Length: 171
Ligand SMILES: [Fe+2]
Image 1: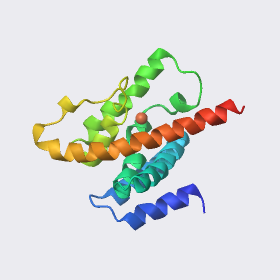
Image 2: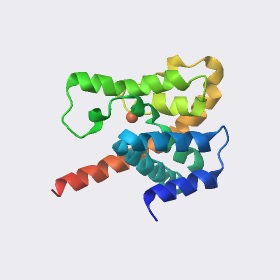
Image 3: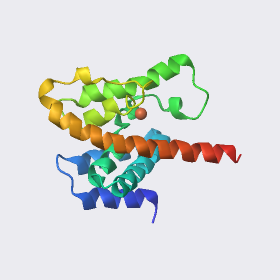
Image 4: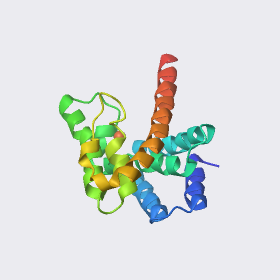
């Protein structure tokens, strides 16, 4: 079974609330038009985040969907930015907007996805995206819950990075 099919089956099997089945499928379908690298990336991160969450006895469902949706705003950016060329500082500045843009666009529409989009690059000290000061205080409890899930995703992202480094070292 292909990775794409596995991901699609998991989207259905988890039966998430809040329209996440349709949101996830819409995102993957749109990403598949011009952003194949982003589609591949989020499918990999979703599966890795889920696996890490299971091993850490965390919420595998939340980790899966956080991994799947964290880069949702990349499809609003020009596809050539992700074709693997050496990007310029100006292009990098453009790419970095996907975190804040995703957060802003989805804040009132879908909080879970908005937080995943806004926070996933701020997990690192040198990261970017939104800060905790961007959130209304009443969302404290939810943001803490989601942050615990995003910490699982951070581990998964590191696994992806280490895998890529190990592959590159073999070239
Ligand atoms: Fe990202």
